[in-house]
Amino acid sequence: MIEIGKLGIIESGDEEGFQIKVLNDSENTGGFLILTGKDLNDEESEGFDSWVSSYSELESYFKESNWKIKWLKTGST
Image (cartoon, rainbow, N blue to C red; front, side, top):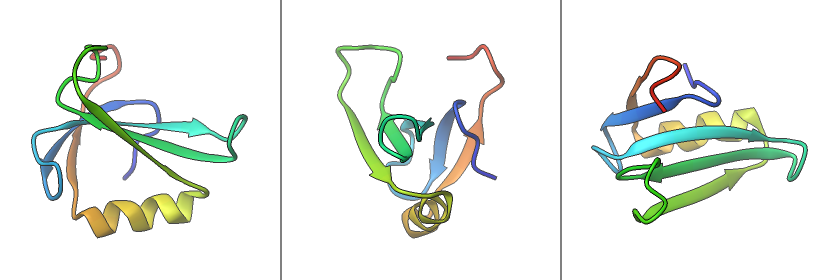
């Protein structure tokens, strides 16, 4: 399951060990932002972002990345 707006840790697949957060950006871009980085809470830490236009594309992106993600409880961001 892909959690929207929650912080997670990529346990396996591309970018293993990185943090991940998916944001619903439908109001601005009509799609979803996928943020990854070593520490998403640190503005000076290197991070990356990707964008997809729909939830089905988001699912395909996750599948292609071979990600297994541990989603953290709310408040862990």
